[in-house]
Image (cartoon, rainbow, N blue to C red; front, side, top):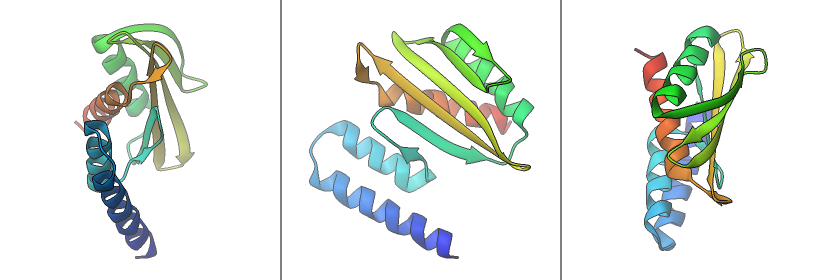
Amino acid sequence: MFLRRCRLGIAVLIVSLSLSLSGCATLIIGSIAAAGGYAISQDTIQGETEKDFETVWQSAVDIVSIMGTISSQSQELGRISGIVNGAKITVHVTQLTSSTIRVKVKARKALFPSIANAQNIFIKIVNRANE
């Protein structure tokens, strides 16, 4: 119950802040955070799922290889690096508990954050894992 209140409070805060700031990206990020409860930084989106590690890992490998190219991957470290839409991306898949996996996607293009790429990759990985 407390966790739901915190998420709702954070979502309201993000939406409020996004409305007070200008820029399309801010509105999109605020909307995503309010709807899905993702943690968002300047260039990273992360969230948790209750699928098993192997399913999430394979989904991440498949999505990155479909959308771009993988330059390195290590299932032991839960890390994939590559290029998607001209942006350097890093995907981290981490086992948090026996039933919770964290997916973290970072994207930067020409030294600048590419949050739209990170968001797109994250959503596709989670959707594929939930199929």
